[in-house]
Length: 185
Length: 185
DNA sequence: CACTGCATGTAACCTGTTACATGATTTC
DNA sequence: GAAATCATGTAACAGGTTACATGCAGTG
Image 1: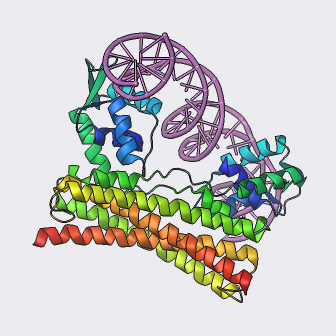
Image 2 (image 1 turned 60 degrees about the vertical axis):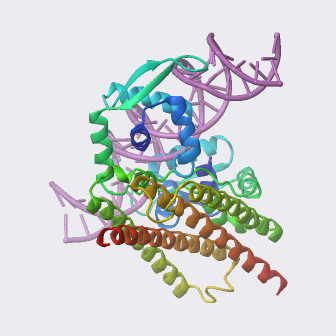
């Protein structure tokens, strides 16, 4: 049910499904991607449940927009979700499973390529998040301390992304080192 | 389709669905949990596709077992998956989304409780993985270097789990510090 | 005889992805 | 007039969860 609550959270400011998709791509992508079709479907359901309300609004360009806002009951549901404490679900990481079975790839070059590719991927993700942090730093006075409350929590989540991608990239590099060390010895 | 390949990987040694569930709970839980009902369903499909073969076998206790083994085509599919390079899917972490909206919880105590709970959770997970590493160290001679190849890769995945849980626990502690610092100031 | 562990499964449901359909407005 | 962007949706499918059903064998 997390998509429900993400939409409730995002709709503290009124927005259309299309707007929300943009927000997901820009800000939520790293911890909760979502497709437009799913967003629309969920918005309608949340309205049926009374957690959202919508009205039609003219668009500056293109067809009519349906703009959603959160209701009191929606806000209550959002707060209840937050107050229930962190919901730490399951991890599903196919690349870890691949690493687990990598001895099946008897060729040492292929094994090394695997960890090299992982290292490159997470180094790139790390760099992208660092770049975002720099943008935020340039925009907000008082960064990174003395931020307004909402920005502070957003800052926290960005920091986690940076720390995690760095950890994974470092791990991949260390695996690669040990694999190549075993060969040249 | 990752569950398919996890089962193929696990079935380099023949096993029943029930055995596999035990293996998922013991070893794969941290990167790919799976329910029995899903395992059974998938095993049957993989047999239909010719990637697995099964035979009935008597059980020492309880009803007859259905023991699966991987076929040549299955092994090829497994190798192809590994050789295709790391498949880095999407992350979906509800607790990060909660942190993102945590300003909605106006009460500072509740905000701090959130990060305290996160810290405790990941510290516990970290400790559990460290304990597993110690067990492995006690069992395997030549740990942590000079391990047989298969064990080495399992060791790598365990290390990643340890490093990631530590990173997250540290991040939560740092958020908590900054929240409390802001209050007493 | 009840309980626990072994062992296999079905059915209903929920969530998320992919492909497709529709149509308006602005830009080249 | 074609392409890009805005904007909303439907349908089919894939993957995962939950609840339930069945039945054997050993233990207290």
